[in-house]
Length: 626
Image (tube, rainbow, N blue to C red; front, side):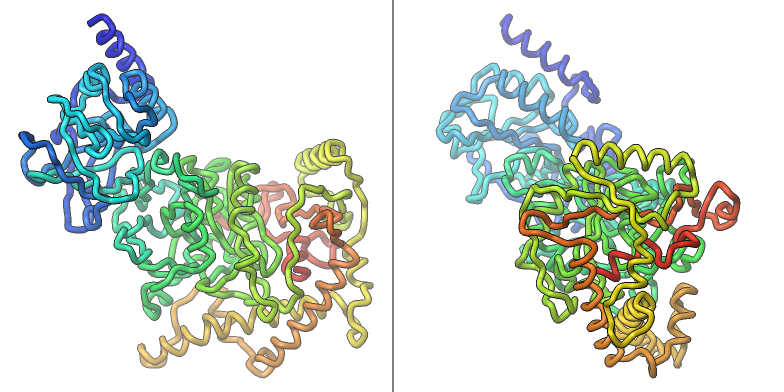
């Protein structure tokens, strides 16, 4: 009896650390504000909101105890925790360690989920000790279910239950619906309010076997915020896949089966159907174990529109500074959500001009624009077929680079016919570049304090990685570059090529389909779009921007990229590039606000700034030169 009391004391001490455990059981009465439909069950538990997928249960367990007396009414909704042991003899000591780990490392699990427990073991023929059962009862477990394929001997305090599926149940918290002789386990999600309004909608897997997702039609009315469902991290702890359990949000420009792709436009929603296939780049994330939790806001059709120019929606909010800084564009929802929410691990976006890198810069997060052609963009609404890229945003640089390395694969590289460039060669190497290129015409930053920080960072990088800092005038080099034999202004020709690629791609993929269908449906009217697009589409010059101009631009771009990779960022078999090129993404080291007038003073800036002595914005180097 002394040992039993000590286990109870240990348990209560463990649960008291940051939990809401009060010693009571998690009976059905502990679930409040229950809303049940054929699709889902939502409820409040321990002051936290949850959602369970009621339409497609994760599994249905069959009660096999011959003299079982079910004290739950048929249809009762209860909480249930799956505990998967590794021992042949499951003791209170093991259970204490397991539950402690659940509480310490998962934001979905609460002690209230111990209202009932399903116990199994990977060790095969196992047994459970009396003190283990007493321990669970002291935790509030009204019902203890034992996996009948593992625990052969029965105890009067536990119920034998059969798990039919060959696939093991993932450990962690579930919602369960009890009948006379079955227990249906429902995937359960914690609902986080999107207080910074970065999401279009939350979503969760349908579990119907089709690979589709279900949009969450719920929001926090008091916060004007969509609710985002996130699964327990415990479910993925035994999954060996590289992105297992990573919670990922996706820019609403990629198709996800079962969801509408808006591209930031109410008009586009009206003329396009719900996606019947997930974009291959996003499907790869699912295949690698990532869990998709929602689709995120973007500047309309992936433009660079400022927050005050958004027409159909409200621009996301930036958690940095006073909360009223810009999130930039167009992957604004992704960057600001990563800065705001520690429950989100990664955000997927696209970068054509600066659409990942600039939002990352203004939110203090990490974001990449990969080499053009790094991953297929099938199922993503195009802005520029030849220069669009897909990247990822993260908070931790090590996890961010690991995510990208797992995601990108040669099997999903774009064909040369799309990029117009030579086939990608991406050596898997740990070799670092040997020098840092410092384009003097792009610096110093307007803000001396920011320049001081930059200088210190570059000095530390050079010292730690044994790199040289090479000062250069990149603009002068580009202007004089012998890229074209038949053109006088090299840089102007390259900028013209990029413009032609963008205008024609956008016209064919977005503008023409939308204008045509809108006119057909609504008596010849022009579709409602942001001012930027309205101006561009009404002034479109079909005689100068056409397929022939696009094809020529693709050839010109190829010449520019080939020259750049040979003369500026050359590569070797040992490294991806011999050099790092340092750029200002267009802030000058100054803040930029979501309200236009606040940027007109000397201590703030409109994004996209270019020094007077530079011939090209440094941010445009990547799109133009690959």
